[in-house]
Image: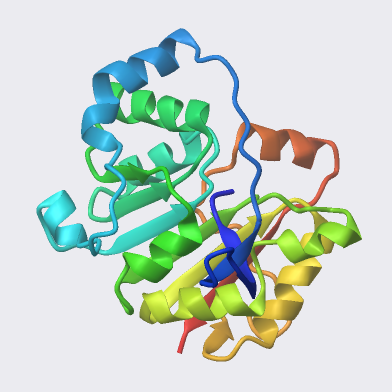
Length: 240
């Protein structure tokens, strides 16, 4: 995942207050495949946006006004590419720090001529806080985030009340926060936190999970899990 959580302030040696952050992700690296090397060399210059602290204005990036979907932690990017191809009327921003995944998505987008996606390789929460205007996102997607399954690591989970409030501010009224996980404990955690997060309504009804919507593709890993009897839980909340 590409985001961190704020923790209490500490003081630097210069006496300045510094906000320490708990990471909800771990950077991992692996050698690039041939397609990933091509993705970075041929397509990344257009698709991977430069790091910046300037305000993010989607119309300037895509050259049009269109509904904006932001996905955090797109993994290898196959699902995001498929969703973008199926919804050319929407624009998509994918945020990820896993370099092979970024490279693979660049390859998928470039070779399939999918033009309505751009990629950001930065901390997602900092991006939301500093670059995205309030009420600027139509859909926020969080699919299969790191579950941090040990109890002592729950503090690292992306879904919590502070992050739900940050996402709510960035969503347009009526915008959707869509989560999916294959860890039942994390699904229950998500439901518990989102049911008590102010400014949202559960689209499936209070206390309910949402059936997988048609627009979220079934990944090969998810299909394999279904065949093995494993569950997958979707949650969809609307900003009110």
